Each structure stands twice: as C-alpha cells, then as structure tokens.
Length: 109
Length: 117
Image (cartoon, rainbow over all chains, first blue to last red):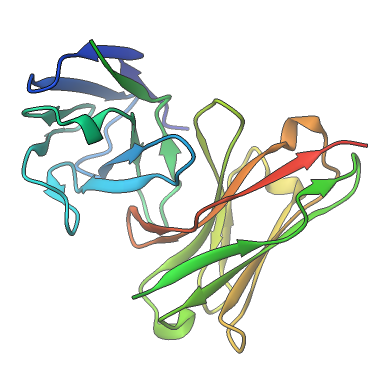
C-alpha cells in the first residue's frame, strides 16, 4: 500500500503571499499525482493531475511540480477564496488504487 | 454538463447495510473511459477511497473495506450504487460519488450517513 504524507498539517499565510504545500509518497508514483481543494461543506475540487497539469478552469496561480516520491503544490499569490484544505492523491497502477494524503489546511495569517 | 447526485438514507442502524445510489446526469455512464467511484470522509477527517466500478461491471475495492463493500451499476438508469454491510459508528461519514479518469475530476455534493441506533 502506498502511503501519502502531506506537510505541513496547517499553513498560515497572508493574502497575496506564496504558499508551498508538500506531499510525499512512500514509493514512486511516477507523475500519477493529483491535488484537490476542499472548502467547508463542499466536495473536493480537482486542481492538478499528472503532477503538474491544471484541471479545467483552475487559475494559473496554482501550479504543481515533482515526480517519483516528492511533490509540491504552489499557490503563487493567495486570494481569499484559496483558504481551504488541500489533499494530494496518488493513482499509480491501473486501474488505480486511490490513496489520499492527510491534507494541509491553508489558513489566514 | 455532467453532474452526480448521491441519494439514500441519512441514518442507518448498527449491523445493518448502508445503501446509496449515485445518479449521473448530463452524460452516459456507458460512454466509457471513466471509473465510477465512491469516496467517504469521516467527520473532520481526510478522504478514504471505497471503490469503483466500470460501466461493464468490473469492480475494484479498497482492500481495507473489500469484505463489506459491493458496488453495482445500472446503465439503463445511469446510476451506480454502494452497499456497505455490517456498519458500525465508524462508518459514519459523508459519502461522495465521483467520476475517476485517472484523478477524480467530478464529484457529487456528498451525503452524510450516520450510523446510530
């Protein structure tokens, strides 16, 4: 079983600043990594897939990088609507067994 | 556009079977290319993948839940369903249905299921 570990658990950032979120896989998942945003009371929304490809309609301030076991989600300039919980998820193998990280909460500093 | 909507009882008694249905609108489950999935989220916690089904009926389940889970599809109704047997309070969660290509690109709004007598 592949274990996904996200850090930090909570990130305090001021609006307009850059946020960098990390995700580590217990073994290589190649580029089979997605990022989701979840706001209170809402379903998760896909932000990034293939480690670095933005999903439809996702603003350019969201970017993903990494491969293998180390991944990063960067939000270049935080907007008020970006304060939320972010999850990474691997989908290695096919059909994929989906494994989520524990999440990073991005809160207002 | 394609939308997913979960439905089913919000309260289930311990030891009984939780049953939920996801109705897909705006597109066909049978069009292929996607796995139709169930994912849950315990209150205040992270996301747990339960399993998914292809329109042909092929299924794949989370090994930790496999003994209690059945996912089925009804292509004539454009629906897929979840059954989780022998539930306990630990199965109390928001249950989401989702469309999975590789990542889960489309989600229902979720439905809270509480297990309590």
